[in-house]
Image 1: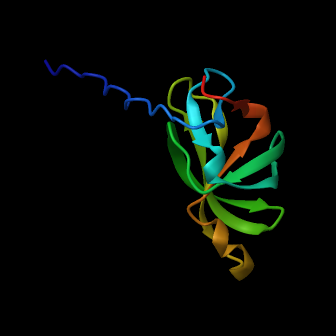
Image 2 (image 1 turned 90 degrees about the vertical axis):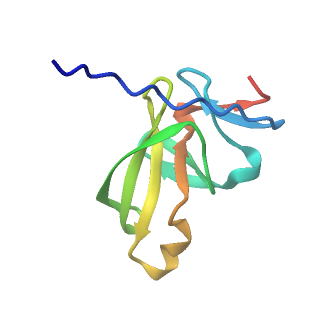
Length: 118
């Protein structure tokens, strides 16, 4: 008989910064104010934030998605603690003016809590 063992989840990264963005569902740290690039993005559930990087999320499969700024290859990102979909990662932008987004992440305001370390 083959015994299957579940892979343990990766350890959570705890961020030490005066302004933390955390998952609204479980308060797992997601990014810091230093990684914030822009607050003027639109997500599926209203306003969204563009970050240069984030933490404590798993990346779903790539998919082509028509967004307000054109066609992009993106992958949804999910909190590794509670599996809430918190946004997406830009994998590829097809418009030259949108290439700056590649490798960056969008996190939706409705899915985050901002404040001092929790």
